Image 1 (cartoon, rainbow, N blue to C red):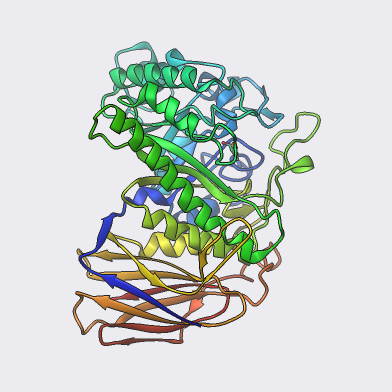
Image 2: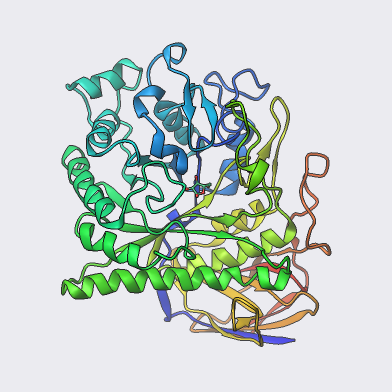
Length: 500
Ligand code: AHR
């Protein structure tokens, strides 16, 4: 099949906020313990941080990390996780029915962020706690000194403030499974008052209110409207959470999740703008897609909870397939193509629990399939996002009526002159002959890099025994021509072309 992509240097959606390459680290299963942190592991540093995982996080190119949850935060007392490790309490974690040792807490997380060279984003507990605990945590983290809480931090060995700028006002407070779930108006008011106190302690914070935990809940839409109605002036972002499932066990249908996420983002932006319109406000609430990924194979039943309150159990350890990597590649294009509203996004999650990175306790760490599109996009997507005009045949699915077989996005970095094109061939049987027309660019540009992520088996996985079964290769069937580029995209492939 033949497809066409037109890009014009002057047709810009927005500057790309590099915080769209964020990830979630939650106290769930083995994400933290035996994931990020494993004292005694041959690769652990003096603080117990796994340097092999740190190296992979840097290679992944993750820019901001949200912590400590997720559902976990709604029952978390942050005070349990600071101070001398030997004196920290062991607690029941009701969100994941596990035992939490609290050996790893806020200060260790900040140390991990500094080592990984990522920005921290903290969530406050608005489930079992409220504004006061949140403002105390902000003071502990961000106040320079001279008060009880800032001096406590200093006594714990952190003289300089942690200086955390991005915060989440709770997590999924609409969700039936959430600890301390609240009605929309009650949550909206709590978010507003909490935001005010947090900003009084530390001006300049960037705050995210909870949107719906998923688009399928009956309250979706009404929740966003009511919450924003209550806290519109106090928050910067509303969250979107999008987990891809495959109820029909049908690969083509599965890749329709990409379009559903796109619709979800646009719907939430429309609701936020409706709230603004009713107030005659020019203010625009931005969107934080602060949980997105594929998650269905290791989701329910035994994968979700284990009896006997185990410590760091093997929970929700989704093994990602090649087809999941295609979905991730397409989703990254959706995030880029909504760059005017999506200023932050987090792959959920980073390690082990629905993680891009897998580890074995005492053993190796390796890249799951979804690691690869994320790493390539994080490395090459820079500067301005160009509006992609796609001409491609479409397919109708059961859940999405009109799915173009080409999903594409592109960035152009005026500072370096590099243009990066990301192209998913969603046609799973036939090759795609892609013609890219580049308007307004110098004619003499050359191909600086080209990659292809493809595997003949859509269900192929990366495992401890075969960690590189699915990995990108150089793209060889591509040529630059005057005014554009031509490439042959294999059936079911995700591709990157960089021109300079
Ligand atoms: O990422 C796993 C869980 O999914 C998070 O804890 C929660 O916020 C969402 O329901």
